[in-house]
Image 1 (cartoon, helix red, strand yellow):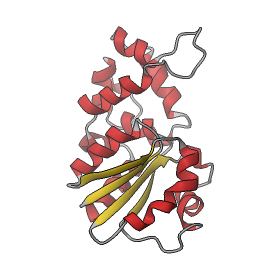
Image 2 (cartoon, helix red, strand yellow):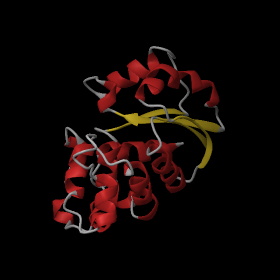
Image 3 (cartoon, one colour):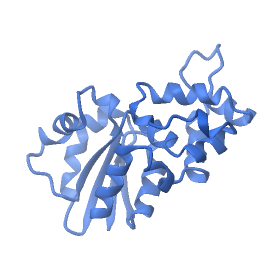
Image 4 (spheres, helix red, strand yellow):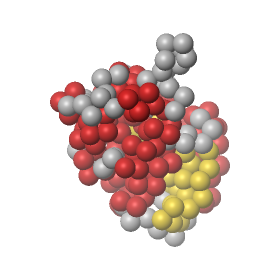
Length: 198
């Protein structure tokens, strides 16, 4: 099936592309890429793209929804705008954020960072701040290029290095394996299951 993508940011794009390929779908148009505010206010407007022959995948971070659970986030993002969205309109939340799904492939992340897999959390969906946890893991990396691409310099002042997006996109492209990740992330497993049902 052709699946159109409504995404929170640019890191979601290679993840969504891998998900579609893994579940046997083709990528349609890509919209969003402007943060969670865009998803919250605009995602439901794309529901007419979802038909019997084409689907829509909205992908964003749950922690940005600022709600108590994913069903409440779905109400906030979609159902308050569209009472009965088509079954081919999927709004999925990475719990707590996309980095949870990336760390869920413990072997891939360990290989990428060149650290022991035992240091990668076995339940990344439960982490309160997955991105910060990933940055702290990267501080231990034996690969200077990876470390410099993820960990910010003290003078920079941000949570991540300026090359964080490019560095993590390369991880998704070259290391991240969905088969490994679904075993450690229930929210990713639910997303895969729904895509496979289409």
